[in-house]
Length: 505
Image 1 (cartoon, one colour):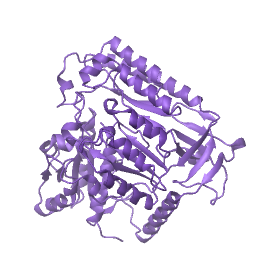
Image 2 (cartoon, rainbow, N blue to C red; image 1 turned 180 degrees about the vertical axis):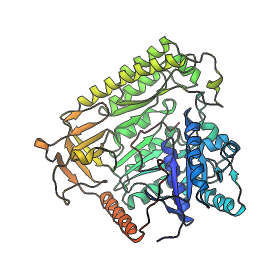
Image 3 (spheres, rainbow, N blue to C red; image 1 turned 90 degrees about the vertical axis):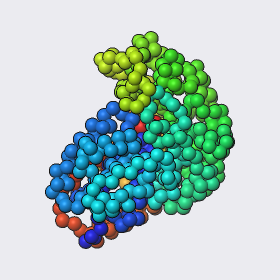
Image 4 (tube, one colour; image 1 turned 120 degrees about the horizontal axis):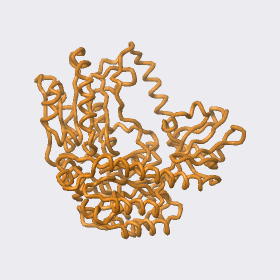
């Protein structure tokens, strides 16, 4: 049995946080820790926090309170809190939860192993919050959560000053990686078996601003098209202000850039957009959607919308509904506005009553559900190419189906029937199937009489990589048989969430 200390990471928030947690895992394993598997009791629990939503504080402190009694019964156990909420609250975390051992910020991920050891030796909490980025996260060790899909950061930080968003204050101004570094990382990932990468940034299409190239992002997309073995390229999140026609052209003309686009709207009202300090208006936004659809007719476009921003009137909200009807989004991530201390919007006049916000929110969700369902029904009879995924279909075992993502990022559950092990696709393989049913949030491809729906199967190196990783994990599990323990009962970081999962900002 291994004597190494076990760690668990609990991740909240956006894709950037999920990717940061992969870095934290890599750092801890490089320092000799081992990941706590399900059923293990962790010696070190790390919370990688988010500060975007109103309930972020409650979620964190609720989980910390749950761990207080666990830690009291386990001498040597340590708790660390990092991420955006740690950057914002700093010493407040230790004041409210004095049993926390380490608090670290968004700019000094690399310090975690040293801070844990210092806290252990000195027997007191270590709070270290850097004011600016010390090491670009992509230079740190990484424990990738998927054998076939990977995040790749192109930048960190944001130069926008949206009045509802606290991220720029916590992540800092935009710092761009050089194209050669990004492409080298992608090539190394492909050599390991990865076939899908997602380019990440708080505002990916402003990439290049730091070194003065306004077309850097479209060039990066085209360069990804030259990487042999890279099947799929996605990116999130862009900003309408910086979304230019050269990016649309690169998407349309680069074979492995997927026909899916997450384009945050936030509001359809020009006056609300002005109050949000979003530097575009309704006409410009709808113009972008029109140009994307003209260049890529089969693109699936998704968005973010905030309902009930301070000063939003019924007429303003009707403008948001108008844009949703015109744009016909494949799906939308909808949010009821919540005050975030430290943002200008929190101090604005005209805070909308919660009941009005809730009613508008429900109307928006109902409209988007109707559109999503109609758009998905239109795909019945279409043949789709799917990258087989792991863990996306909760009912797959009961329904004799597997799940995958179409090129436009729609989730598809497809029937595999009673196929033998050698004919069954693996996560990381590509299959084609015909859509037989469209639901609001997914598609179904069923075979005749409950049989196999797969028309073609391409067994890829990414499937081999997934198989090899599972075999290695199984062998390790046999070697390291553990006595029964009680888990912490909290969610951990998993495989990269399908994009878009949640707004980066």
